[in-house]
Each structure stands twice: as structure tokens, then as C-alpha cells.
Image: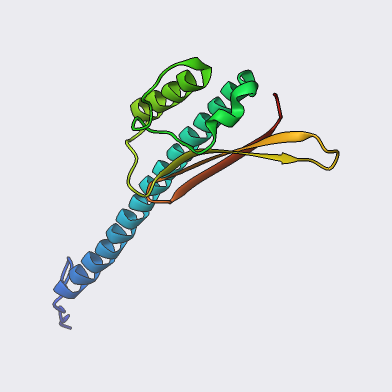
Length: 154
């Protein structure tokens, strides 16, 4: 008896190669999107950490300089409003502006770096200073809002 030899091929057909290329391409695009998202997330967390450290430094300086807390009201932390440098409050303002401009990127037009102080009376009639530090950066993708209440010092 004679055996009929079928035509068997070893290897891949064009269709199989195209399907495998498509699967590889979809996986590669997904990986690129995921890595881009990871880089963006890392940048946001780094900016949030730096902003938190900055607000804590400002609050520590205000604890030392409690009698001048009202002088910090509506202070925007940048180099544009540092004309006079005398007294502890102005030296702190210069220090904060220098740190913000050397350790962080320069602010974008939408960024906010501001200290606000308001005076109020608590339920016992004692005057208090409420300090709020607001830092927004990366086009408002990162916002750090920190506050503390100080006793009013006359």
C-alpha cells in the first residue's frame, strides 16, 4: 500500500503573523498609556509632598513669630512683592519666596501660593488668628490647604 503524503507546512501563515502583531500592538499601546499615567501620578505626588513640607515650614515660622501673624495677611509667596526687608515677618517672606523659587518650579499663571490671616472671637470671647495657607500648582491638579489657629497677641 502506498501512503499519501499530505502537504504539511512548518511555520506561520500570514494571517497568524498579522494577528500576533495586532495583539502585540494593543499590548504595547496599553503599556505606554499606563506608564504615562504613572509618570503623571508620580509628579502630582511629588508636588503635593513639596507643598505640604512648605506649608509646614511656614506654620513653624509663624509659631515662632506669633505677634506678627496679622502682618502675613494676603501674602502671595513670590518675588514680586518683596520690596522692603526689615523685621522678622519680611525676612520670613523673603525666605519662603526664595525656597519656593529655588526648590520648585516657577508658578504658572493659575498657581496660587497664598497666606491668609483672619481675626475672630471664639465662643469664650478670646481673640484668635486663623491662618490658612493655600498652595495650588500644576494647573490646579494639586491643592494643599493647611490651617492653624493662633492666640491673638497684642
